[in-house]
Length: 80
Image (cartoon, rainbow, N blue to C red; front, side):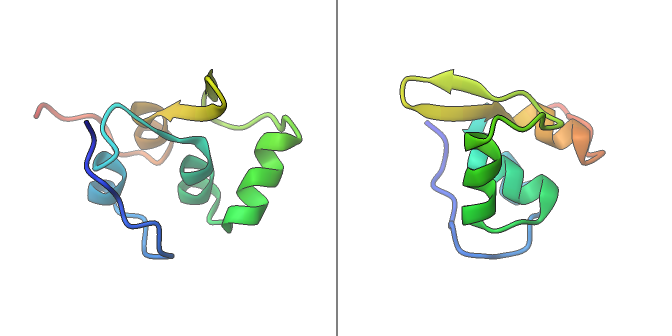
């Protein structure tokens, strides 16, 4: 199970993104990529905007592969 990540408005670092593990909530992905707040991120998802990363439905949640966000931000995957 992925480590809990502080949801406070902190700087999005590679380490912070990697703490989510294999997938991260799409709202957090949108915040990391677009630098927006929670309300705007939810608005993007609800509107079905074409985002620059995959958004997958898992039950009632939307998740995004963490690797997509890292690649989009130019932070290549490295061996653990």
